[in-house]
Image (cartoon, rainbow, N blue to C red; front, side, top):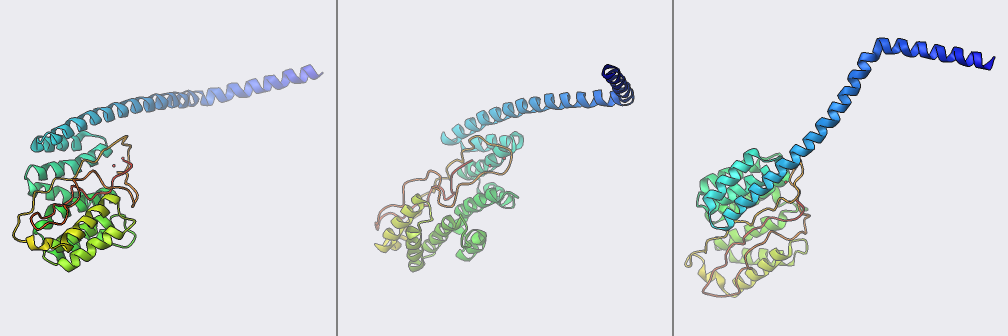
Length: 281
């Protein structure tokens, strides 16, 4: 009797399955096909994305070589093309590098225009870097009050950009002849343990320089041409905003610290005041 009931039960199940298959079989096959196609498409996208990033990396390296070789205009053009075609992370970095290259090529107008465009970027990190670089680009011929306004978003307490912004304002005081304020600000930066080590060293050198009478050269000795900010290394860029270093990270490679106290040589602006660290989506 048990076998009979089992056979009946199996027949009922079979009939139900056949009925379901007749009604929904096409949908089941279509759904399975979509899953297979989606998996294959995802694998294809990963392959394409890796290829595009590899291509962007090679093009970025070529553009950087042009910049390092002194071919600033050619580098600006290469970075500009990369900014239009590269994945988002490399594109953002390339825009910053394009502005640097334009500035190095003497095209200050286009460089500052690009910096200002990036200052309005939705990525707060990109916007902050652009603001710092713009400030260094125009500090020599911009009133101190305007510099304060420009850097106000970065000078709030707790901001990771407060020290780099403060260095620019201290330099603006120096260029404006406000030596007492400049020395006080440089001393504060030199004692700020949250500031990057290289920035503290530059600030200490400047405080020593000005304290020894370096102010005598203001307005009489031309300032040496500042080197452009060092390159931002993209590293393994992933989709998303440009990564940023923590507030206490060391700045990008810079020139030597401000010169020692002397009455014959005025200090040069630092090569870069942008925090550096983990890698720009």
